[in-house]
Image (cartoon, rainbow, N blue to C red; front, side, top):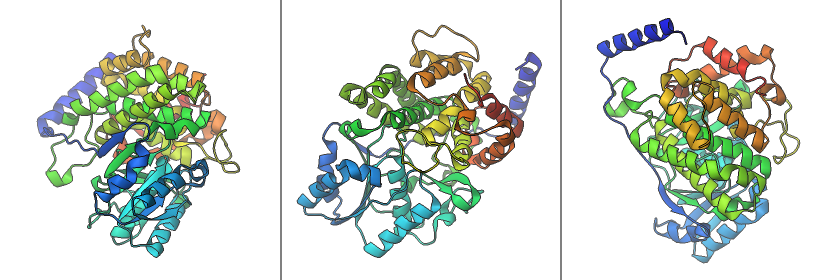
Length: 440
C-alpha cells in the first residue's frame, strides 16, 4: 500500500470514528470442557447429570468403522441410557444430508440429549438436528443471510455433547454449523449462541486413526482459526451495538487473543510431527489442545477472508479427490479450502495490523527473521509444503476463468468478511484468488 493510500485510509477511519460511536463491549462464550485420554468413556456419566435418558448418537460411516461410536454407545448403555445411533452423516454436510438426519431424528425421537462423535461434519450435523427437533421450520429458515432467512431459534435446544475424532474444526466449541446448499452451489452456515455444544469431550486417543491428509487439512483449519481470529478487526473497531444486536463473532479481543496465541505455539511444535507420525500420542495430544484452544478463540473473535473464500472453493469443486477421504466423490476438504488462499489473504491484511502478523509468524516459526507483508505468508507456505497440501487452487481444479465465480461466492459470506481487519472489495478478493492459483 502506498503512503498516499495509507493516508487516505487513515483519514477515512478518523472520519468514521467522528460520526459513529465505537463498541465498548466484547462477549465470550464457551462450552463446558472435558479433556484427556479416556475422556470419551465418561460421556454416559456426564449425560446422567442432565437428567437425560434417551440419547441420539450422531456419527458418519468412516468414524463408525473405527468402532469408537459403538464403544461410546455401549458405555452410555451401561449407565442405563437408551441409545439410538444415526451413522449417515455426510462428510462435508449438505442441506440434503442434514435434512435426512433431521428426518431420522424426528421419526425416531423424542430424545433427551444428543451426542456427536466424529469430525466437524458429525458435530455440525448434530447441531442442525438439535435445532430442528426443538424448533419450528426448516434449514433455510435459519441459514445465514443472504442465503437463508437467518431466523433465531425460539425454543431452548437439547443438551449436546460433542466428542471430536479429528483435530481441526473446533466445532465442539463454537456456535457455528456449516453446510453446502446444493441447489445454489454455495457453502454457508447457521450461527447462533444456542448451537454451541453443552459439553465438549476431547479425547486425543480418538484421533490416532486420522489419515495423513485429514491431519494436514484439519491442522490447517486449526491454524487459520487461530490466525484469522488473532488478525480479525479489533472489537472496538465495530460500531456500538445494543445487546440484542451482538453476534457471536465480536472481533479480536484480549481473551480470544490468549487462546489463539497458545494454539499457534502448540502448532509450531506438533503439526509436522502429527502429520509425519500419526501414532505419536504426544503430537496428537498437542494438536487436540491446539484445536480446542483455537476453537475457544475464533468461536468468539471470528474468522475472516480465508474462511469466506473457502466456502466457494469447497462448494464449486469439480473432480478433485484428495487421499484419505471417501472415494468416488469430488471434495476439497474444508481445512484445505481455507488454507489455499490464506497466504495471499494475510499478505493483503498485513497493513491493517503489521505487528500482529509478524508476531504470529514468529509464534509459528521462532526462527523467522523476515519483516514486512511476506513474513507470515512465507511461514505458511513452508508449512503447507511440508504437510503435503496442494500447491494452489490450480491443483484442485480452478483456473483464472473461475475467479469471478469464486469472488461471487465469497461475497455471499458477509458475516465473515465483516470481521476482516480492513474493508474487502470484489477486486481485492479477485487479487487474492488469482495470487493463490499457484503458490509455489
